[in-house]
Length: 316
Image 1 (tube, rainbow, N blue to C red):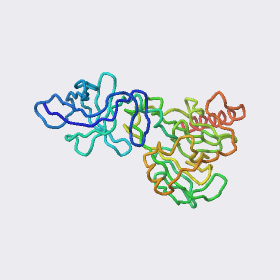
Image 2 (cartoon, rainbow, N blue to C red; image 1 turned 180 degrees about the vertical axis):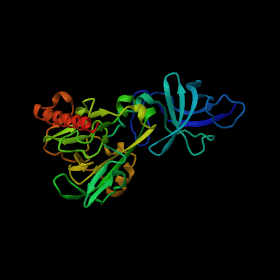
Image 3 (cartoon, helix red, strand yellow; image 1 turned 90 degrees about the horizontal axis):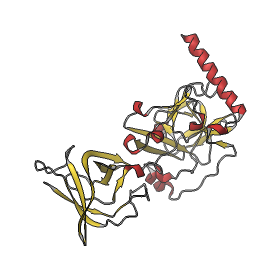
Protein backbone atom coordinates (compact mmCIF):
# COMPACT_ATOMS: atom_id res chain seq x y z
CA UNK A 1 0.00 0.00 0.00
CA UNK A 2 1.51 3.30 -1.11
CA UNK A 3 1.62 6.31 1.19
CA UNK A 4 1.66 9.95 0.06
CA UNK A 5 2.69 12.81 2.32
CA UNK A 6 0.97 16.19 2.21
CA UNK A 7 0.82 19.47 4.05
CA UNK A 8 -2.69 20.70 4.82
CA UNK A 9 -3.62 24.19 6.01
CA UNK A 10 -7.05 23.39 7.38
CA UNK A 11 -10.31 21.55 6.99
CA UNK A 12 -13.06 24.00 6.04
CA UNK A 13 -16.73 23.21 6.41
CA UNK A 14 -18.44 26.56 5.85
CA UNK A 15 -17.63 27.86 2.37
CA UNK A 16 -14.99 29.60 0.31
CA UNK A 17 -12.70 32.24 1.73
CA UNK A 18 -10.70 32.94 -1.41
CA UNK A 19 -11.90 31.31 -4.67
CA UNK A 20 -8.80 32.49 -6.54
CA UNK A 21 -6.38 30.37 -4.58
CA UNK A 22 -8.76 27.94 -2.86
CA UNK A 23 -7.28 28.75 0.51
CA UNK A 24 -9.78 27.97 3.22
CA UNK A 25 -10.36 28.98 6.83
CA UNK A 26 -11.93 27.28 9.82
CA UNK A 27 -11.65 23.83 11.33
CA UNK A 28 -8.78 22.57 13.40
CA UNK A 29 -7.09 19.95 11.21
CA UNK A 30 -3.68 21.54 10.68
CA UNK A 31 -0.16 20.41 9.92
CA UNK A 32 1.18 17.45 8.01
CA UNK A 33 -0.51 14.22 7.10
CA UNK A 34 -0.63 11.45 4.57
CA UNK A 35 -2.90 9.65 2.13
CA UNK A 36 -3.02 5.92 1.60
CA UNK A 37 -4.49 4.44 -1.57
CA UNK A 38 -5.23 0.91 -0.33
CA UNK A 39 -3.67 -0.59 -3.47
CA UNK A 40 -0.73 -2.96 -3.16
CA UNK A 41 -0.28 -3.16 -6.93
CA UNK A 42 0.50 0.42 -7.86
CA UNK A 43 2.54 3.37 -6.68
CA UNK A 44 0.12 5.93 -8.13
CA UNK A 45 -3.57 6.69 -7.93
CA UNK A 46 -5.95 4.74 -10.12
CA UNK A 47 -9.71 5.10 -10.49
CA UNK A 48 -11.49 2.93 -7.95
CA UNK A 49 -8.69 3.03 -5.39
CA UNK A 50 -9.89 3.76 -1.87
CA UNK A 51 -8.08 6.84 -0.61
CA UNK A 52 -7.87 7.62 3.08
CA UNK A 53 -6.54 10.98 4.21
CA UNK A 54 -5.05 11.39 7.67
CA UNK A 55 -3.88 14.44 9.56
CA UNK A 56 -0.94 13.98 11.90
CA UNK A 57 -1.59 15.79 15.18
CA UNK A 58 0.00 15.82 18.61
CA UNK A 59 -2.55 13.24 19.70
CA UNK A 60 -1.85 10.99 16.73
CA UNK A 61 -3.19 10.45 13.23
CA UNK A 62 -6.77 11.57 12.58
CA UNK A 63 -8.73 10.41 9.54
CA UNK A 64 -10.19 13.45 7.76
CA UNK A 65 -11.48 12.01 4.48
CA UNK A 66 -12.06 8.68 2.80
CA UNK A 67 -13.52 7.65 -0.51
CA UNK A 68 -12.87 6.35 -3.97
CA UNK A 69 -10.33 8.10 -6.16
CA UNK A 70 -12.36 9.75 -8.94
CA UNK A 71 -9.65 11.37 -11.04
CA UNK A 72 -8.64 15.01 -11.19
CA UNK A 73 -10.33 18.17 -12.34
CA UNK A 74 -8.96 21.54 -13.40
CA UNK A 75 -10.42 24.54 -11.57
CA UNK A 76 -9.05 27.99 -12.37
CA UNK A 77 -5.92 26.39 -13.80
CA UNK A 78 -5.21 24.36 -10.65
CA UNK A 79 -5.46 20.57 -10.65
CA UNK A 80 -7.52 19.03 -7.87
CA UNK A 81 -7.75 15.40 -6.92
CA UNK A 82 -11.30 14.14 -6.37
CA UNK A 83 -12.26 11.80 -3.55
CA UNK A 84 -15.77 10.43 -3.98
CA UNK A 85 -16.91 9.81 -0.42
CA UNK A 86 -20.10 9.35 1.55
CA UNK A 87 -20.48 13.10 2.02
CA UNK A 88 -20.04 13.85 -1.66
CA UNK A 89 -16.90 14.85 -3.48
CA UNK A 90 -13.98 16.27 -1.60
CA UNK A 91 -10.94 17.68 -3.28
CA UNK A 92 -7.38 18.70 -2.53
CA UNK A 93 -4.79 20.44 -4.65
CA UNK A 94 -2.40 18.30 -6.63
CA UNK A 95 1.07 19.50 -7.50
CA UNK A 96 2.34 18.34 -10.90
CA UNK A 97 2.56 14.54 -10.73
CA UNK A 98 -0.46 12.98 -8.97
CA UNK A 99 1.80 10.17 -7.78
CA UNK A 100 3.87 12.66 -5.77
CA UNK A 101 1.28 14.42 -3.63
CA UNK A 102 2.12 17.64 -1.84
CA UNK A 103 -1.19 19.19 -0.82
CA UNK A 104 -1.28 22.90 -0.08
CA UNK A 105 -4.71 24.20 0.82
CA UNK A 106 -7.58 22.18 2.16
CA UNK A 107 -9.89 19.31 1.68
CA UNK A 108 -13.35 20.64 0.89
CA UNK A 109 -16.84 19.42 0.23
CA UNK A 110 -17.97 20.39 -3.27
CA UNK A 111 -21.35 21.46 -1.90
CA UNK A 112 -19.58 24.48 -0.43
CA UNK A 113 -18.05 25.59 -3.71
CA UNK A 114 -20.77 26.77 -6.02
CA UNK A 115 -22.40 29.92 -4.68
CA UNK A 116 -19.54 32.39 -4.85
CA UNK A 117 -18.12 31.03 -8.07
CA UNK A 118 -21.09 31.30 -10.44
CA UNK A 119 -20.57 34.25 -12.71
CA UNK A 120 -22.79 36.35 -14.95
CA UNK A 121 -21.98 36.18 -18.62
CA UNK A 122 -22.40 34.92 -22.18
CA UNK A 123 -21.88 31.37 -23.38
CA UNK A 124 -18.97 30.68 -25.69
CA UNK A 125 -19.91 31.48 -29.28
CA UNK A 126 -22.12 34.46 -28.48
CA UNK A 127 -21.74 37.02 -31.27
CA UNK A 128 -20.87 40.54 -30.09
CA UNK A 129 -21.47 43.46 -32.48
CA UNK A 130 -18.28 45.20 -33.59
CA UNK A 131 -17.69 47.83 -36.28
CA UNK A 132 -18.46 46.12 -39.57
CA UNK A 133 -19.98 42.93 -38.19
CA UNK A 134 -19.86 40.54 -35.24
CA UNK A 135 -17.19 38.56 -33.41
CA UNK A 136 -17.49 35.56 -31.05
CA UNK A 137 -17.13 36.81 -27.52
CA UNK A 138 -14.23 34.44 -26.80
CA UNK A 139 -12.19 36.13 -29.57
CA UNK A 140 -12.42 39.59 -28.02
CA UNK A 141 -9.70 41.03 -25.86
CA UNK A 142 -8.62 44.26 -24.16
CA UNK A 143 -8.66 47.19 -26.56
CA UNK A 144 -10.88 45.58 -29.19
CA UNK A 145 -13.69 47.86 -30.41
CA UNK A 146 -17.30 46.87 -29.79
CA UNK A 147 -20.57 48.55 -30.74
CA UNK A 148 -23.02 49.75 -28.14
CA UNK A 149 -26.76 49.39 -28.62
CA UNK A 150 -27.01 53.12 -29.39
CA UNK A 151 -24.36 52.93 -32.12
CA UNK A 152 -21.25 54.14 -30.31
CA UNK A 153 -17.88 52.44 -30.60
CA UNK A 154 -16.22 51.69 -27.28
CA UNK A 155 -13.20 49.62 -26.36
CA UNK A 156 -13.43 46.32 -24.54
CA UNK A 157 -11.41 46.97 -21.39
CA UNK A 158 -11.30 43.31 -20.42
CA UNK A 159 -13.04 40.04 -21.21
CA UNK A 160 -13.55 37.95 -18.10
CA UNK A 161 -13.60 34.17 -18.55
CA UNK A 162 -14.93 31.48 -16.27
CA UNK A 163 -15.25 27.72 -16.75
CA UNK A 164 -17.84 26.03 -14.55
CA UNK A 165 -18.06 22.30 -13.87
CA UNK A 166 -21.21 20.25 -13.68
CA UNK A 167 -19.74 18.29 -10.80
CA UNK A 168 -19.20 21.42 -8.75
CA UNK A 169 -22.54 23.15 -9.31
CA UNK A 170 -26.06 22.21 -8.30
CA UNK A 171 -28.26 21.87 -11.36
CA UNK A 172 -30.16 25.13 -10.85
CA UNK A 173 -26.87 27.04 -10.85
CA UNK A 174 -25.30 25.17 -13.76
CA UNK A 175 -28.15 25.51 -16.26
CA UNK A 176 -28.00 28.65 -18.44
CA UNK A 177 -30.97 30.35 -20.11
CA UNK A 178 -31.61 29.95 -23.83
CA UNK A 179 -33.42 32.91 -25.43
CA UNK A 180 -34.85 31.76 -28.74
CA UNK A 181 -34.42 33.92 -31.86
CA UNK A 182 -36.97 36.75 -31.83
CA UNK A 183 -38.16 36.02 -28.27
CA UNK A 184 -37.46 39.58 -27.06
CA UNK A 185 -39.39 41.27 -29.84
CA UNK A 186 -38.29 43.21 -32.90
CA UNK A 187 -36.42 40.18 -34.22
CA UNK A 188 -34.02 40.13 -31.26
CA UNK A 189 -31.99 38.15 -30.72
CA UNK A 190 -31.28 37.27 -34.35
CA UNK A 191 -30.28 33.74 -33.28
CA UNK A 192 -30.56 31.74 -30.07
CA UNK A 193 -28.70 33.43 -27.22
CA UNK A 194 -27.37 31.42 -24.27
CA UNK A 195 -26.30 33.19 -21.09
CA UNK A 196 -26.31 32.75 -17.33
CA UNK A 197 -29.56 33.48 -15.46
CA UNK A 198 -28.19 36.53 -13.61
CA UNK A 199 -27.07 38.34 -16.78
CA UNK A 200 -29.41 41.19 -17.71
CA UNK A 201 -30.93 41.93 -21.11
CA UNK A 202 -32.31 45.36 -21.99
CA UNK A 203 -36.01 44.94 -22.78
CA UNK A 204 -38.77 47.55 -22.73
CA UNK A 205 -36.51 50.14 -21.13
CA UNK A 206 -35.53 47.82 -18.25
CA UNK A 207 -32.56 45.67 -17.40
CA UNK A 208 -34.08 42.22 -16.89
CA UNK A 209 -32.06 39.20 -15.77
CA UNK A 210 -32.37 36.23 -18.13
CA UNK A 211 -33.79 34.07 -15.35
CA UNK A 212 -36.67 36.52 -14.85
CA UNK A 213 -37.53 36.23 -18.56
CA UNK A 214 -37.95 32.44 -18.55
CA UNK A 215 -41.41 31.39 -19.77
CA UNK A 216 -40.73 27.70 -20.36
CA UNK A 217 -41.18 28.07 -24.10
CA UNK A 218 -39.38 30.73 -26.14
CA UNK A 219 -37.13 31.47 -23.16
CA UNK A 220 -36.17 28.44 -21.11
CA UNK A 221 -33.43 26.87 -19.06
CA UNK A 222 -31.01 24.69 -20.97
CA UNK A 223 -31.19 21.21 -19.36
CA UNK A 224 -28.02 20.19 -17.55
CA UNK A 225 -28.19 16.78 -19.25
CA UNK A 226 -27.68 18.46 -22.63
CA UNK A 227 -24.54 20.28 -21.50
CA UNK A 228 -20.95 19.02 -21.38
CA UNK A 229 -19.17 18.45 -18.07
CA UNK A 230 -17.63 21.91 -18.22
CA UNK A 231 -18.89 25.11 -19.83
CA UNK A 232 -17.01 28.37 -20.36
CA UNK A 233 -18.69 31.77 -20.09
CA UNK A 234 -17.37 35.23 -20.99
CA UNK A 235 -18.16 38.74 -19.82
CA UNK A 236 -17.19 41.96 -21.60
CA UNK A 237 -16.12 44.91 -19.49
CA UNK A 238 -15.98 48.42 -20.91
CA UNK A 239 -14.95 51.66 -19.26
CA UNK A 240 -18.55 52.25 -18.16
CA UNK A 241 -21.60 50.06 -17.64
CA UNK A 242 -22.84 49.90 -21.25
CA UNK A 243 -25.35 48.13 -23.44
CA UNK A 244 -23.80 46.05 -26.20
CA UNK A 245 -25.41 43.77 -28.78
CA UNK A 246 -25.21 40.03 -28.18
CA UNK A 247 -26.64 38.05 -31.10
CA UNK A 248 -28.34 41.33 -32.00
CA UNK A 249 -30.03 41.85 -28.61
CA UNK A 250 -29.12 44.62 -26.18
CA UNK A 251 -27.39 43.27 -23.09
CA UNK A 252 -25.34 44.75 -20.28
CA UNK A 253 -21.58 44.81 -20.03
CA UNK A 254 -19.83 43.87 -16.79
CA UNK A 255 -20.97 45.58 -13.60
CA UNK A 256 -19.09 44.67 -10.44
CA UNK A 257 -22.00 43.14 -8.53
CA UNK A 258 -19.85 40.04 -8.85
CA UNK A 259 -16.17 40.50 -8.11
CA UNK A 260 -13.62 40.19 -10.90
CA UNK A 261 -11.76 37.62 -8.82
CA UNK A 262 -14.57 35.16 -9.59
CA UNK A 263 -13.18 34.89 -13.13
CA UNK A 264 -10.45 32.45 -14.09
CA UNK A 265 -8.30 35.19 -15.67
CA UNK A 266 -8.53 37.65 -12.79
CA UNK A 267 -4.71 37.81 -12.70
CA UNK A 268 -4.76 39.18 -16.25
CA UNK A 269 -6.91 42.10 -15.13
CA UNK A 270 -4.55 42.88 -12.25
CA UNK A 271 -1.54 42.72 -14.56
CA UNK A 272 -3.19 45.17 -16.97
CA UNK A 273 -4.66 47.68 -14.52
CA UNK A 274 -3.33 46.97 -11.05
CA UNK A 275 -6.44 48.21 -9.32
CA UNK A 276 -10.10 47.32 -9.63
CA UNK A 277 -12.33 50.37 -9.90
CA UNK A 278 -16.01 50.22 -9.08
CA UNK A 279 -18.53 50.88 -11.86
CA UNK A 280 -21.69 52.95 -11.70
CA UNK A 281 -24.76 51.16 -13.03
CA UNK A 282 -26.83 52.72 -15.79
CA UNK A 283 -29.95 54.54 -14.64
CA UNK A 284 -32.38 51.83 -15.71
CA UNK A 285 -34.75 49.81 -13.56
CA UNK A 286 -33.28 46.37 -12.84
CA UNK A 287 -35.68 43.42 -12.65
CA UNK A 288 -34.48 40.14 -11.17
CA UNK A 289 -37.75 38.19 -10.72
CA UNK A 290 -40.54 37.39 -13.16
CA UNK A 291 -43.19 38.71 -10.78
CA UNK A 292 -41.58 42.16 -11.08
CA UNK A 293 -42.15 42.39 -14.84
CA UNK A 294 -44.44 45.35 -15.61
CA UNK A 295 -47.52 44.79 -17.74
CA UNK A 296 -46.02 46.68 -20.69
CA UNK A 297 -42.98 44.40 -20.72
CA UNK A 298 -45.09 41.27 -20.40
CA UNK A 299 -47.01 42.43 -23.46
CA UNK A 300 -43.82 42.81 -25.50
CA UNK A 301 -42.69 39.32 -24.54
CA UNK A 302 -46.11 37.74 -25.08
CA UNK A 303 -46.42 39.29 -28.55
CA UNK A 304 -42.93 38.07 -29.49
CA UNK A 305 -43.79 34.61 -28.21
CA UNK A 306 -47.05 34.52 -30.21
CA UNK A 307 -45.24 35.73 -33.35
CA UNK A 308 -42.69 32.98 -32.95
CA UNK A 309 -45.39 30.33 -32.54
CA UNK A 310 -47.18 31.59 -35.64
CA UNK A 311 -43.97 31.48 -37.65
CA UNK A 312 -43.45 27.85 -36.59
CA UNK A 313 -47.01 26.97 -37.66
CA UNK A 314 -46.42 28.51 -41.09
CA UNK A 315 -43.17 26.61 -41.47
CA UNK A 316 -45.00 23.34 -40.79
